[in-house]
Length: 326
Image (cartoon, rainbow, N blue to C red; front, top):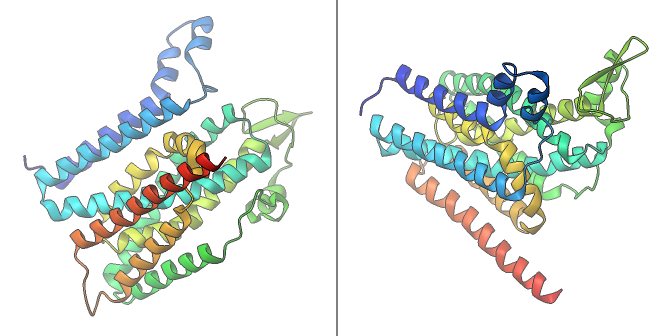
């Protein structure tokens, strides 16, 4: 099966479009508009909570969809492009886990009920996709036109790794000192009480931002900062915009389901941060020495998978020991 790049984009768009529509409940909402009000109330389940089992199943489905698309790439191109896609996808997905810890802190600090977190993540994912495409195109263009930018991106990854090393473990985020919140306060007042799942509310004719919108703004800004680490990491694997964009969007699209799954087990991933630090150091090294020695894509893929496998196995062993001791 040989597809042109335009046909590949069409296949990719169809898979992502349909999958996101189902995962975010968009199809249910559209279908409910053709029913009466009482039926609509039952169908539009915007405050539905994803159980551990549901989030696990949806996460597995997103991984399977990424695997299917990798097969399409393999049948169209070759194993090299396929490995680039898979390595980029695994990198983005693994680095996203650390970002989810910040999401948890934001929701905890603002006291966002579990049932409302789903909507914030849904809107956040859709806006993050557009932002990521823009950042990827700029990054790929810089590498194509200014080869020395590879050292800049390598330096960014090293800084990210050192930041992780010296990062303090926090139980809450200082909302008042957050730059995004300070900027938002200059535009409109913020209501601290959560009574419904709206991003904005009117009080005495004045528009107020709710804690849900504050959480959304912080998450978006956090994701933008996070993209400064994760996108250069994928660009170290390939500068092909098609591979970088598709692997990123596949990883981001499944984040909502992955968040509800990871939030249940993240306290058991004892060596996650260590693994991510090693990953960033490896990718930074790959970029910096690329002029002297180029690490092949197959070796890169194997090292990334090996690091993540060690993290998961070591965490499972420690979790088992902690359980036995308790």
